[in-house]
Image 1 (cartoon, rainbow, N blue to C red):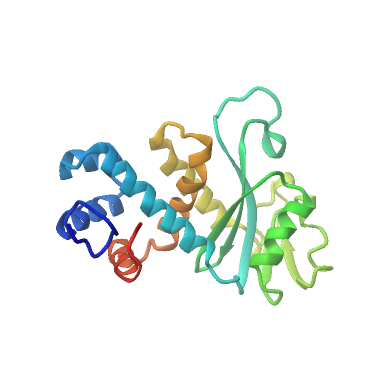
Image 2 (cartoon, rainbow, N blue to C red):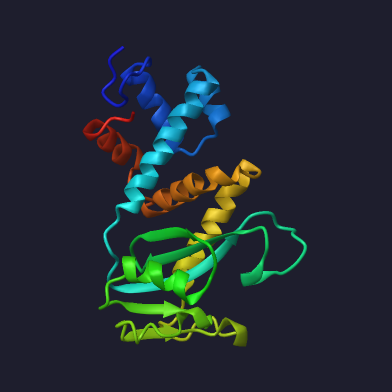
Length: 224
């Protein structure tokens, strides 16, 4: 059966459009299968293909410029014995960049060291940007890298905003992503990246019709 949105597909264009609308409404795979009457394995495969495309599009984002907020967050089980915070064991560490009034970019990092975070910053943030962070020492030295405008708030001293100096935007994304991921009741570690990038894509297109955005993308470059 010919399908304009998926190569080598056995489902019709109409069925795929129905599926995509339900996916964009953020229904679960079980709910989508019940409504569309598609086989659950087919639904899982389509969801995975779409998440992979979302991840690819997110990774292709241009370098950010403007007012940029930086922060790290930890994803995983709520109760883990041992350290908490930036040293928490068993958690997946995600570094996030948020352009105020614009997009978020996330990347899983091995740790919160200066080298790990600055590697991402150099690759994704234009030098002329105004950078806002908290007081974590890994952000020391950004001025030496050429980022001349770097402002901090010191959460450890209960300082969360000082005029325009804050990281409320990226913290808002962390809250959104963690709330949304709760519905999965956990995930395989190898699948976390795709779930994260789906959250990123949804957040970045929250003011648009995501169904039309994806439909246009798949017309231009069908899923495989």
